[in-house]
Length: 320
Ligand code: ACO
Image (cartoon, rainbow, N blue to C red; front, top):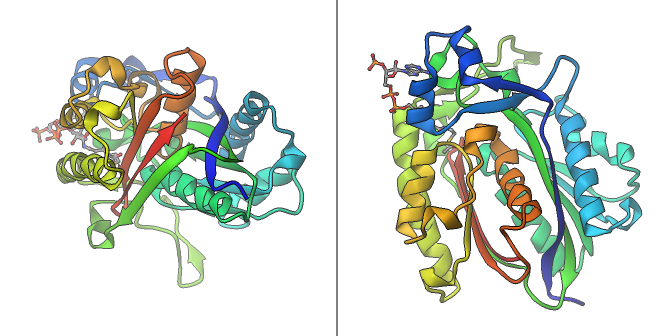
């Protein structure tokens, strides 16, 4: 049995429709300058009517399979992170399984909001390490635009849609060196969609609510701490890190984590300007972007980190 998992290939997909900050000026009382200065976001992609989370996930997964040179029939696990499943059930992982031509293997969703991809990667890595899977498809896909209140300028300018995927394979060498995931549900009220299936009924208007300042402070403190803990757990110095691949919520949060790692911004993958906050999709989208444009190379060491509703948070130390 091979004791580690490693990334065999990555893929991503963004819906065609681009919404700029100028476009948002037509919808809410905001400006391009305010959004860019506070968040680093210039534009984001959003799904068209009739386009769903599973559509984005299928396209990203197909790109990852092609990059990994793995056939759908060789995949023996699908873990999909999303907050915006197509339906309450079945899981979006089950919905995409036949569309990818995969049969008879475990497929399930993970819900950890913006930390979802790190959770999914951590779970899939454990399946591969224990020999329960040899080739796993790990996807982060979200259509956050469907949860936005278009009258609330403090949230509708931040979130967006997309999907990213990786194919993990069993390996003699790491690969995924370590993953660290955590949660504290005591903070659930600071970032939530307080609707769902209650009393046997689904609620209307499931909109995202956020106390932005408090989330910002917690995110900066927690992310600074977890990058230290991740290095410490592996007996590594900051200088061992070639790339920070962070969750893309806000450029100021990303810069604070980079400072904590003494990393120049040239070694940080930043896609928030073009993608906005795509929740579970943001890390695999950033990873795929930097692999495809040649920045991240085989053998380099990356740290991924994320923070999101729950609160949830997590990190992964990876040799690509
Ligand atoms: N356009 C113009 N003005 C706005 C907008 C907008 N889109 N949104 C809010 N404002 C106003 C506010 O009403 C407020 O006005 P007031 O002073 O008259 O009351 C003013 O701007 C300042 O608002 P703040 O909330 O204090 O602005 P802040 O600098 O904190 O930035 C932001 C807000 C960008 C939301 C920030 O708090 C943030 O990024 N928080 C983290 C949230 C986040 O990223 N969440 C994602 C999930 S968790 C994660 O992924 C890390």
